[in-house]
Length: 135
Image 1 (cartoon, helix red, strand yellow):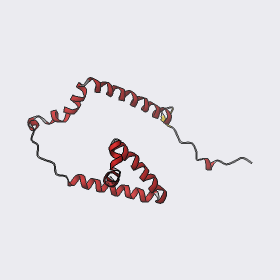
Image 2: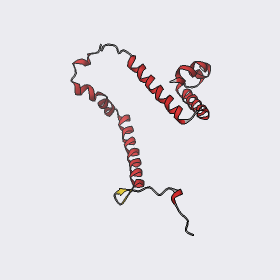
Image 3: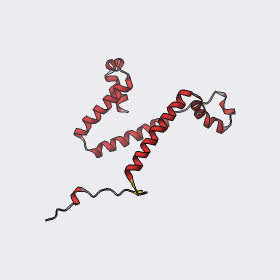
Image 4: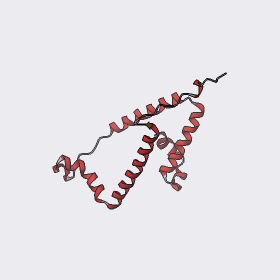
C-alpha cells in the first residue's frame, strides 16, 4: 500500500518506462529489505497488520453503485455459476485448467510422499542439538 501511495509518485518518470506493477514489486521488496535492517521482525509484522486493517477500512468505505444490468432477473444459481461456465466454455482456459490440475497433482503427490511413511505422518527427525556423543 505504501509503495502505491508514496513510492509510485516519486519515481513517476521511471514508472512510465517499466510496467508499473513490476516496478512497484521491485521497490516494495527493496523497501522491506531496508526496513528489515533497521527494525525487528515483530515491528514489521505489526506494521503489516496495521496496513492490512487500513486496507480493509478503505475497502469497507467504498460505496458500490446500484446495479443497472438485467441480471437481477436471473436465478441465483445461474448468476453464481456464470463465471465457471464461461471459463469452461473457452478451450484455451480449459487447457490451462487441465495443466494447473496436473501441476497441483504432482505437488500434492510430492507433499504426501515426503510427509507420509507406511500410511502415517512421518515424525520429524530430532533436533541436532539433542544428539549426544558416545564417550
